[in-house]
Image 1 (cartoon, helix red, strand yellow):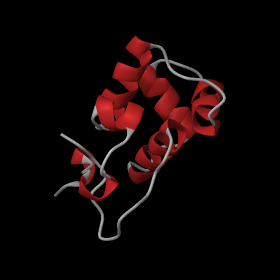
Image 2 (tube, one colour):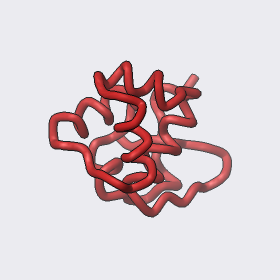
Image 3 (cartoon, helix red, strand yellow):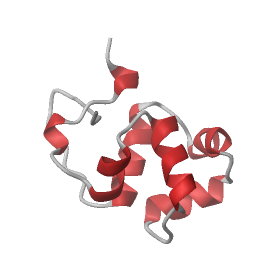
Image 4 (tube, one colour):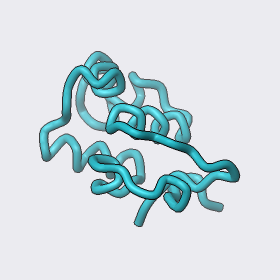
Length: 89
């Protein structure tokens, strides 16, 4: 399982970027994602700016909520082949 299939290849080189792009693909605000994960909007903002890293349990929950592969979220991979299950028809 991967994520973020789109007509155009995307390049996301950091955990922060992968979280941001995944959230945007789902049309979620930072506040809405925070509620779904059980954290604050400030926590999401810090993740997306690279100011902090999620704990293992929060990373698993974040990947689940975003509908993305945990390994891809954490270390990246072939972004061109990744698919967001939430955006597939």
